Amino acid sequence: MRRLWLTCGVGSSSLSRLHLSSILSSTSVSSRASLISAVNTFQSAALRFRTASSSPTRISRLTTVSSMASGVEGAVFNLSDSSLLKILKGDITKWSVDGSSDAIVNPANERMLGGGGADGAIHRAAGPQLRAACYEVPEVLPGVRCPTGEARITPGFNLPASRVIHTVGPVYDSDVNPKESLANSYKNSLRVAKENNIKYIAFPAISCGVYGYPFDEAAAIGISTIKQFSNDFKEVHFVLFADDIYSVWVNKAKEVLQKA
Image (cartoon, rainbow, N blue to C red; front, top):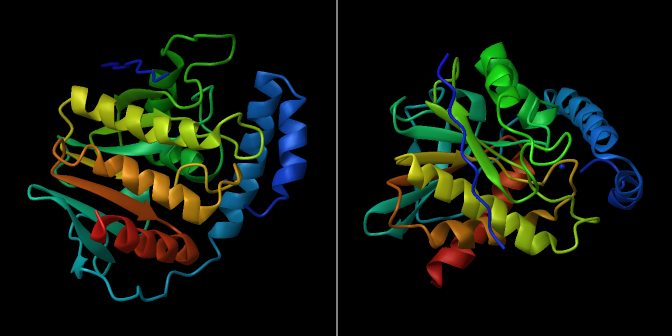
């Protein structure tokens, strides 16, 4: 089996974030990861009942993306003369561009062995080989393969995308500096992608599920950080499952990119 991993270091919403934060801060790493996984699993099941039927506000232009299911529409913005940002509603596990220089970002936990929400969905779609590859990533602390804000890379296995970049976003109410940690999650994911010759990369809304990050602030950080890498990728995508998050991201991209 081909195993790839890389270390790169710099420097989710229906539950009460305050209550969850107090629980997380008082548990061990393994217990904390198990709790987050259980909550994510519940949240993932609930999200399956949601529909995806809203229309974006007026934006730069709209496109139909052929690399996902037909009929998926998204907003398209220029990051630079040679790079595009695409914001899509859809399932990130079905995303790909060319199957060779593309990668999706997995909002993992520190163990990197799967969980709920997008993390669990990505592991299920990739197959058991992904968990086996993650297990081979060395622990930097007991039970921790990827600390908050860092990133690791593995093959995509049964996913349409060629690689998976795993990153751990901050728990909003318990992280000492959630803004810096979230920016690092994006920066390190992009740096790992660049070092591995990835030209197309797709992100979820990192930390916007049970980790409780406010959508508007998270969108501003994600889009602003991606803008710093605009000359390193042909396309950067956000693939977002929920209507409300999608709308926030489109509006924030208009605000951030049109005044840049």
